Amino acid sequence: MEKVTQFFKIRERGSTMKTEILAGLTTFLAMAYILPVNSQMLSQTGMPIAGVFFATVMASMIAAMIMGFVANYPVALAPGMGINAFFTYTVVFGYGLSWEAALAAVFISGVLFLILSISGLRQMVINAIPQALKYSVGAGIGFFITFIGLKNAGIVVSNPATFVALGDLSHPAVLLAIFGLMLVVILFVRGNRFALIISIFVTAVVGLLLGAIGVEHMPAFAANQEGLFAGAGETFFAAFRGFGELVRTPQAIFIIFTFLFVDFFDTAGTLIAVGNRAGLIDDNGDLVDGNKALLADSVGTVAGSLLGTATVTSYIESSTGIEQGGRTGLTAVTTGILFLLAILIYPLISVVTGIYDPVTDKVYSPVTAMALILVGALMVTQLKNIDFDDKPVLIASFLTIVFMIFSFSIAEGIAVGFIFYPIAMFASRRHKEVNPVMYVLMFIFILYFVLMAII
Image (tube, rainbow, N blue to C red; front, side, top):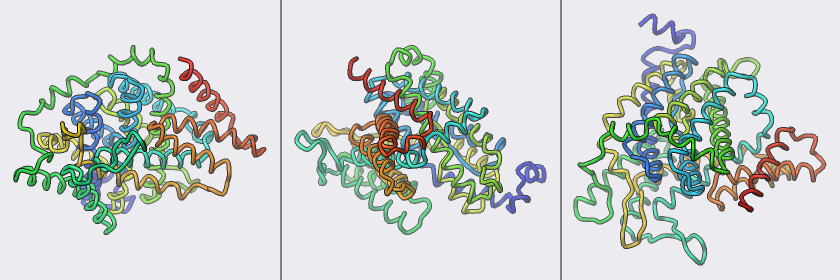
């Protein structure tokens, strides 16, 4: 025990082993919702849900272990919310790539992130992109996944006259989703740090009970599920099968850049936020061993892509463990061990999968929809950091967000914002304030849209 205490510098950081382990448990409970949500979302691409579940567990465990043992940070990691939506709805559904090709793009972005993490390029890229655009991308993703949550719940549906409209609020699956949304809002507003996982569990139980008494279109436990390790075998190293398709895709560079961009800045923002709370910011305002923390994130993404899941990133839910007193990597290691043990709950995953109604020809996901909506709401809070009195910032941020939603594409929202920011700055005679890297990105994105129009 003494060696563990010394290795993680537990006393130096004013903590105890008991506190660190409790903090790890707290962090796991706060982010365990990602297991059913990520599995359900990525399985829509045709991936075996068992394989995604196994990959989510293992990638989260590997990344947390590296974060704990190498960086000594009380930060846990898992496949990111928002980026898994980009994987599913933009890359696979929007661009028509196979899920294997999407995994190949995640793999390449992870390798690039790894290179950035161990080189001086990291700071150059961070400095090139204005802070307002980073915030607007985060907020835009929040709106995007909230829209997906409402769609999955059946609360919002397509409409040929108005594009979108309210769904059938009398449908049993929609009513169950509304119950889950009301529950998570109540718990969250009352300050319950486990609002998401409790709401998912309670909604699933309510749905099972209603189904047992004869209510149609409720979640059900499927006794005959695909085997966990059989599914894992299908996704394991599937990324390598997708390389050929990816390199033949005109949007490949754009897709890889988006995976890299979102992961890079989401991770940096999370680490800075939790680092402040954990006392891991030095006198210069830099993260202590920040490169090691970024290394854990990038290795997690590479491992996750090879196992069969979307980009792995640091989770802001780690702040719940830090509030519990976690200050060292033992918190992250504890969370990683609990993720590994979560393999035991796989037989219950069928309860959160989609419910198909042949009458409406729609698939409903009432058990997990509220997680997307609440996480989206939390991401939208980044808007408060944007100076809307600055006209170029206002225009670029606004267009980034609305194009993400209305084009149903995170990537194209980023592209539009990165095009209009330099244009607006040039029009306001402030072009010298724009980093040259932004002009390069602007021309790349313009070229992308031109090629998309003529191909």
